[in-house]
Length: 268
Image (tube, rainbow, N blue to C red):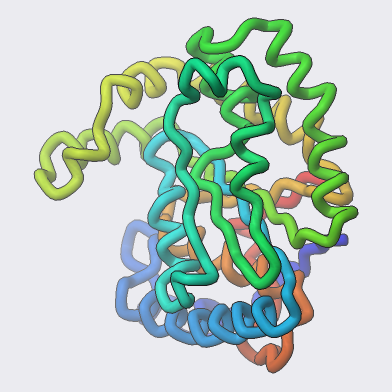
């Protein structure tokens, strides 16, 4: 069973604030890169343990549009062996898949022995975006909730190490990031019409997010909510939380001490 240890025994609180934080409260890039590098060493150890012991690790990332799901997955994946670690971002279901059991196309992607899989959005589309934009019926939405906890309990019962992260951002942060995508040609490919529509539906997403936490935040599959207004702090704490909850060989307990209460909330 996953648990969370809140601590201030973290690198960012052991140094002078001026060495760690910018004036806006976000962490500085040089501090982030040094701390991230330590965590990358731990992730490589974790992957070796997963491979050697034929474990299966499945990690789901959900969150508001522009919250940083893809970049957080990149943080996890940076130094992992790509043959045994992959990211899954499924497109819209095709006509054949629309006639299948809702979970079917997702479950085809669950990890094999010795493999790590990251979902960039998941079956929880039905809990959020599909409901907001009418891509599913109310009956389908409620049916999803009658099944999801059972599906996840079966995954965990079968021995899959299963983690669910939700990256949460304020409406102001979302607006600023969309503006950045508008003006930055290197990020323009990330921008879609749905981003603007999602921004207008921010409150509806909030209501459905809380419903999701209440119904599907369970002891066997809790939600780890991350304050992602500072992407870098969210990434560091996501890695810390996952590593703290797996007893892999060679763990450096001076690096993996717990998570920041300012950033992480557990819904179980």
